[in-house]
View 1 (cartoon, rainbow, N blue to C red):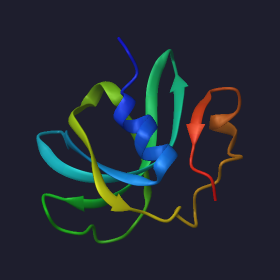
View 2 (spheres, helix red, strand yellow; view 1 turned 30 degrees about the vertical axis):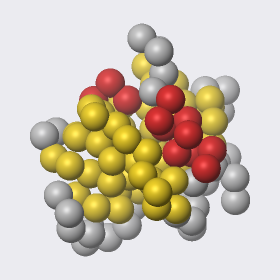
View 3 (cartoon, rainbow, N blue to C red; view 1 turned 60 degrees about the horizontal axis):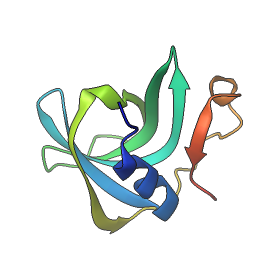
Length: 100
């Protein structure tokens, strides 16, 4: 399976992506792509869920295989303050991350 190019584009250009996750429509601000247990993951901030903003902004982990109908949208984002690119879980597994 080829990596999802929309996520690479979203990370590189700091653009949000829309996707279907657990049958819900979400808008994500992707911060980092990495591998874990030989599967690709993205850590992203959920900007909207079913058209509504979340109660709190936080960085979540998503398996790329679980995200469907992914589309890059023309909506810029600023990197989330709590994102720690040096976190241990990313060491040696990072494919691409947002630049501050």
